[in-house]
Length: 188
Image (cartoon, rainbow, N blue to C red):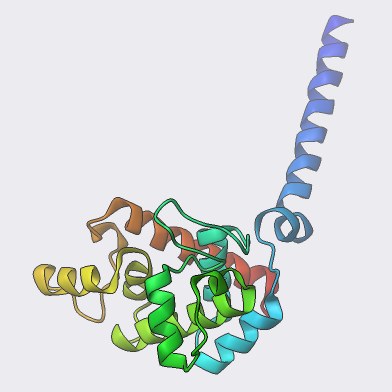
């Protein structure tokens, strides 16, 4: 009798675990809870305008701010794409936005536009190498240029684990993983 109850309990537990896993791994659950994509039209608009992968932009936003428009880092980075006000001011000059104030980085459209433009400038500087682009987005373009000189990295650099800053190494890995998930969930 006890053995039958135990087997029934084990069977029920396995069925519940399987059902839970099916829900957890479903596209619906993943989109709703792990990889949402608010501001999709703006991401695609500025991705097209600046020739940047829209799923890379979505992955940067997810990693930087989890799509919280007014996110602010302890270091002072602001908005969806967590841009520093000084960088925002510089990007505003480059794109001809004369009315820049740091608070504008909390506007989703401004954050996405400036972030997409900045990613495009890094893409050009690092000859399309997404690992170097993302390392520069997180750790600074000057640091990445210095690593390239000191460590002999070329435009074909692919070894994420060689990035000297742990935070930047982890950031690049997270963004690239998230980009693939966005492609799988929202791509054609």
